[in-house]
Image 1: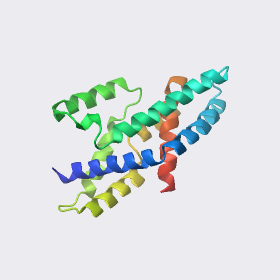
Image 2: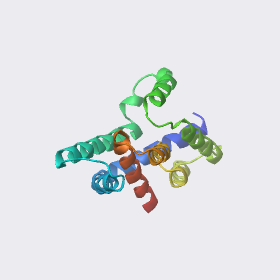
Image 3: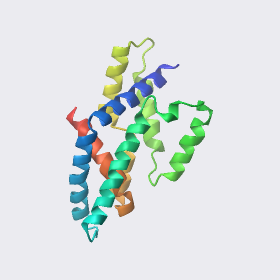
Length: 170
């Protein structure tokens, strides 16, 4: 396995541990950020039920991120021949364009790669990558939401912002 791929696997595994360990904090942070953003963006949510629906979506997106980063998740259980097709389909389905961010992440991982990396070095490089680049695809989500805020983008944005706040504390 090439060294860049090893760093990326360690990057996702470290993100998995970080998001999983902070799941409850992320939910609390999401509730606060959601209320704040609804007020700041002047979104009209007429009742608590609608607010709770958006908060439920945030919870689901947090769990989705945990599964996305999971090093032994379902996405790793099958033949990887369709991985590139799935990656392209995901880019077509998302409301944000994360392809440039992924290519930047890949290049940053490539620059950090060393010929023979111990597990300790690999973990340290993954942590550096997270501190430098954040959690993929947060930058794309935050940038595109900030450029054009909309209710349908709100749960993705809230989760991305909450995860980045956890990373900032590292």
